Amino acid sequence: MNNGGNDEILYKYSIIRETVSAVEVGKMLGLDINGKGRCRCPFHNGADRNMMVYPGNRGFYCFVCHESGDCIALAKKLLGDDCRYHEAAR
Image 1 (tube, rainbow, N blue to C red):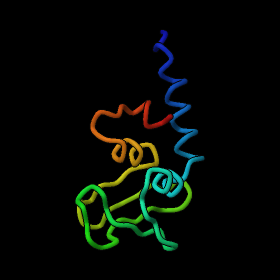
Image 2 (cartoon, rainbow, N blue to C red):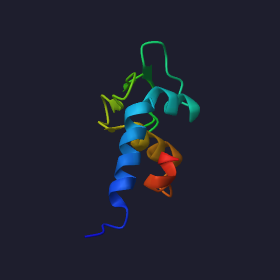
Image 3 (spheres, rainbow, N blue to C red):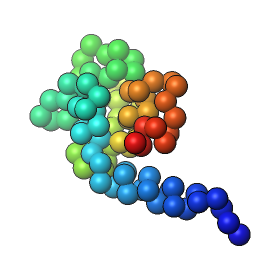
Image 4 (cartoon, one colour):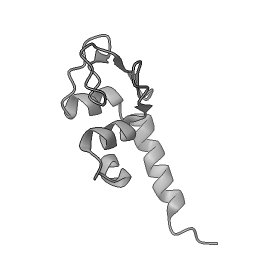
């Protein structure tokens, strides 16, 4: 049964998640991430560095509003509500 290429798309997303750092994505999209991986959370407009952006493929997590995810989710959230998942992956 043909799944319309979904396996290939999922494979590409998994490669992105494994090879692209959320730190790289965050910095590219304007987050001021310090040397310890901390930054102000743009999702609840935090005044303190409550969000941790982990090295490698470990994603991000805000200790206040509990937003979290991988590098693609971070890009999607930073790019806004109109951004689709495949656009964020690009």
